Length: 539
Image (cartoon, rainbow, N blue to C red):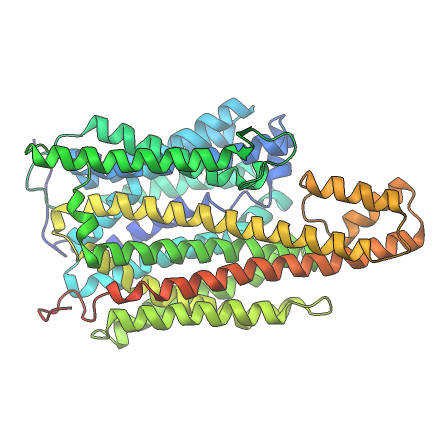
């Protein structure tokens, strides 16, 4: 029996529908950041190592990346509303399993696998359900609010995780997710299903190729910090003297190429592909997807760099760090509401370009403001600018991508869109981390080498330790390590000075690469249309 479908805004409560879908997006994004401040507590509680918990976070990202495109097609097969509710049920079961997990394998089952599969069904369905419940002229605001909900979740995730870990237990975060899922399922009854013109078939070969290709590429990116981008770190896997990261990324790209080649062959033989290869020739769609990629690359890069500065360089607690990041999320939310309401006919291309420029200015101002004597307040203005830019992009991009294809293909676009944002987020974090560590290592070793107070054996030992990937250290952590090693006062002070300077150099390098990325993004903005989706004028 075909599920009930509706016309745009056939639901009696469009605001309630939007709130429900935004809550789903919020929940999916929350898991990407909420436990980053609680890794040690989780590891101790389930009897594993910090590396084991980081592996669970990596696996969650990996599962989402692998199954996002097939997840969109499943929604087209069984109905997007049904896919959304089934995904919520799977996600809720994963959250409950995680909340009760006694060991790492159970944690991996709940957090990494079940929640990842649930997210792969939910996120593409959200894109299709917005298209099915709102008229074209209202979609920019709707997609913007949904995207803002995700950014808010990423921003307040560390704050929620810090509060839960400090005063209660990290398990309460996942128990709270179960309660949110139950609330979403109750409210989801008011959502009108996105119309379906046909019952598609799932291309299993294409699903396998896309999952393996994206999975290998994303896994390689996620391992770059541990294994090294090109030159392998000591003890890291390599082939022909080159880090395995390169080979995994190349293998992933090859499989993605084979996937699109196979999809084109299916079309030639009048068979249904998993993804229509014509999408690659759609200028508006590829432009929107490219900007989504850059948006999340910069967003996650910023959310990597700024918390490090606040928590490590300035020594702020998890709660204070989370509070300092809030301006970005709040500004983004305000802009997402403001632009479609006050300027409903504004050119999407103009808004996107202004948004990218705001990101660039915010990154440059933050890079210039970083200083050893600066306080936490210096991040406020840059984060407001970055939030302004993110809000401008979010207010337009969702409608740009979906309006580029017929509504019946909105879930396909949703799967690709979320795979692209997942890829951008992974690369953003990896790039920021790699440049930060590389610049920090170079700066620290250069400063130590030039200081005659530091003995030669200490310099040699520092070089070996840094090459093995010593993490970013606060002054307190370094002081404790030096005291334990019996270092002299002169050596201790020299190391602390070098560490403070190197830390800032590393943070500036990470912000510099993010600023360069925003400049690169400007070259792709000409693919964004100049008129809103509802307009009949050519873009």
